[in-house]
Structure formats: structure tokens, C-alpha cells
Image 1 (spheres, rainbow, N blue to C red):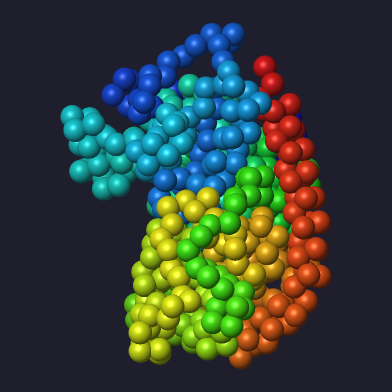
Image 2: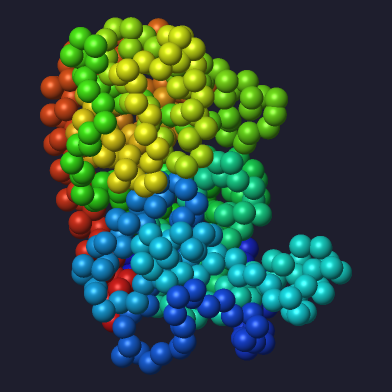
Length: 447
């Protein structure tokens, strides 16, 4: 065991209540079932049962890439294990990963007494059912692992969403004696006080924690979580294989290279009109201005998404560029993507990348492509600093197009130097991730 449970005095009341009533929580109507096969209690000599927990199947390519990375490793190293995904969009995950699933929050049966309770005490019945059904589900696993992602923040989320669900699953695992692990996760910022409390306690109850950067570890330490035994390891998606280049765009007008621009439908940390509209429109206008400048210089430009929702931003940028030129420029491409593999394939024939989403940055670095970050959180800056690219960061809400041009010209001039640094560092990352995976197997997955 790498991280011992901490003294959780703040949870004594709920722990005692849960222990006293656990035998009453096992009614069949409160039991969520895997969507593609049954899941029943089994003897100790049966295959290890592993739950992979996270915000998967929702259109975020980086999150799904994190799931793919650990899933591929587990399937290779423990082919006998029974692996399930605990996620919000079960159908997508089942089809994409050939993986049985459970919902993060089980639906209340129509005739359940929880619905009656919910009418008497609004929201209470729903949340009690969430806890009861989660307790029943956790008993079926040998361990639950959160593979990567920036799960310990509240970007565009309410405390009643992922923060509450993560707390409930962590608490249920603790009460059931099942290991709960965070592997190479991101943490912070968490702005809402309830979200902060829920996620802090979820992290405290974990048996294993590792963070994808020092900033995430320091953030949790600042919340009062003892992280002294926790490791800092690279983002888990660095262990994914790199793709081969894709066709679809020639070099620019003067034979200059293709520049990739990763866009995001960003409207603030917690989007609230009308400020969200201003933030979004300013960002799109500046990206279009920079892309237009590249095209006028003779470069090819490929607009790239990192989430299904980013198709809106992609279309808006292309529309503004088309308005600048009077027609769609011949050396502008904007292909749709459906996965992190699609994104990395689109990046593979670019010279440089300018991107906002964290996992778009990772895609570029996996391909050893120098990258400029136009980020909305410290995680981008932390990663590029570790890569030696700390001079090539900006914040999305303060994007300076003039500075971006200067950063681009400098990075292009010193392209070979930075490409070599990225190549060396990426190899280190893969080696570190392999050691972490082995540690997970030896500590949590060993019978």
C-alpha cells in the first residue's frame, strides 16, 4: 500500500450510519448493473475485477485517451482481469472500447421509495439513492482506478455534478474496503467551496495517488491532503502510440510548412452570459486574426478540435477567416475529429502547433512537435515548463496576437533545438509511466 488512509474525523458520522445500515442497502432495486454483462459476487479465486472511473464518453478526446492508455496496458498485462468502465455515457464507451460499463449515477426505478422520499425532501431521495446504489456497485469490484484526466477541478461543473459523484464513490470504496486510486491526475483549481470540500475528501480517502504535475500535488497539499508519499508522474496519455501522418493539406502557397491551431469553445471557467459571450468572441476573433496572418505569410493552416463541442469554435474561426479572404483559402483545412487518435493524426504533418486544450498540447508533444500554449489553466504552463518551453505560453483571456506572432517566429527559428528537447523528455515520460503502471499492478492489483 503506497498511501495509507488518513484520519477522517469529518466523516465519522456518515461512516457510522453507513456501517449500521449497509445490510439494508442491498435491495435488488438499488443495484446498478453493467450494461453488457451481469456482475455478481464471486469467490477470491476468480479474475480480478477492476473499475475505471471517469468522465468518459462525453466527447472530450483527452479524457477518452486517458482511458485508452490504462485500458491497453491492463489488457496486455492482465488479460484475465474483468475490466469495467464507470462513466456518464455508457453507450459510447461500450462501442468505442468494447468494454462493459456502469453509470456513475444509477437511475432511480419508477416504483422506488426513493422517488417518494425525493418528493417529500427535494434532492435528498435522489442523492440517497446515488449513495445506496454506489455502495452496492462498489462491493463487486476488487479496486477502482481513476486513469488520468483533470478530474479534481470544477471547470464548467457544479458541486452536485462530478465533485459529489467522486466523493460518493470514494466514500463507498472506503466503507467497502476496496482500494480507490488516482493515477496521474490533475488537480485544481476548484473554485466552489462545496466542490473543494467534496474533492478534498475524495482525494484523502484514496489508497493510491499520483499527479501529472507538481502544481496539482501542491494544490491538494494546500487543501490539507497529506501528499508526502504521492508521486508526480507524466500525464497517462503519453503512453499512447504515436500515429502516422495523414493526408489532406499541402504545404502553403510558398511551400512553407503547415501550422496547426487547436481551438476550443471556451467562454470562461464558469460560463455566465453576457461575460461568456465577450470572452468567447474575443478569443475566436484573435485566433482567426492569427490564422489569417499565417495564411498571408504563405503557411498552410490546419484548424484542430480537442472535443466534440469544439466543432462550434472551429466553424466560427473558419467563417471569420473566409470573411477576411473573401472565400475559403486553399491552404486552410478544418477536419472534424472523433477521438484523440484523430487529433494526433491531423497534427502529424504539421511543423508547429498552437493549442488551448491540455490534451491537444500533449498530442503535439507526443509527436515531438514544438507547441505554443494559449491555455485557460496552469496545467498547460506547468507541462511546457517541464518541457523547456516556458517562454511559449499565454492565457486565453489575455491573448496578445502580437506576442503570439513573436513566439511563433522564435519557435520556428529554433525548431530543431526544441524538437530535440521534446523528444528526450517524451522518452523519459514513457519510462516513468511504465514504472507507475508496474507499481499499480504490484500494489493494488496483486492477489
